[in-house]
Image 1 (cartoon, rainbow, N blue to C red):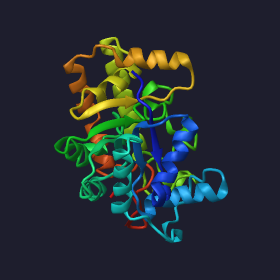
Image 2: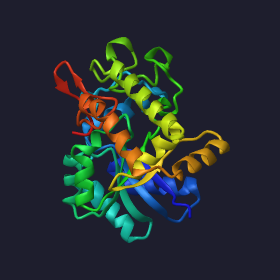
Image 3: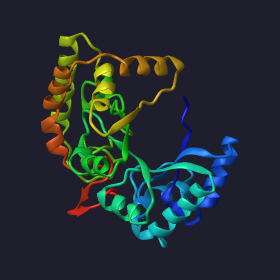
Length: 287
């Protein structure tokens, strides 16, 4: 079964109908299975996309929320989405990268949120602190993106020097070393690659590939319904599906959890991989 999903940027939430009808036209569809609000409807949630729209290309280093003049009301946006759902144009409403505060604001409108798509993998477990428990309590399924942590969990990169600059922008890395980074933190690079090595060792010991462990581990976590693994080739789709179907014992899952616990603690509860504390100010889009 194929589930068709798409997203609406927070910047476009002032006219959800227009955005959705545009999506349906491009898909040549009468309705969509899942329509997600992509990032919270706030100034910080909108800022990065505003830069992208103006420059026609992605500017990784900038986020300027003070330049956002108008923020669509969250209440009205979700009320509009519910109207579209009643009309049969949307089957399920979801969100992406919403923290607990934004989830509460959305739920207060009476909307049924089907899913929250968040970054979740062995090297980035921030959702476990607050977001995942909240989603479980409110019957919101979690979709995990970046399960391979941009190639780190394939074993492709052995050190920070091996990682392309545009990928070394997450809070794992020292922002002072990368002009494309905007999170303002010192990162945990040494611990990151020690953790990757631990996972590699566990994979070799039990006769699994790192990809098998990386895709299977989040699927074993309560509240997780799906893992979104990127692919640019048909062969990668097949290999990802096979890896996710691998039989991994509970003992291995437990060992993986324990081996990544200190990195989880080092990165903390901020579920935004790309924005953090800059000059003492929290700039996360998910708080």
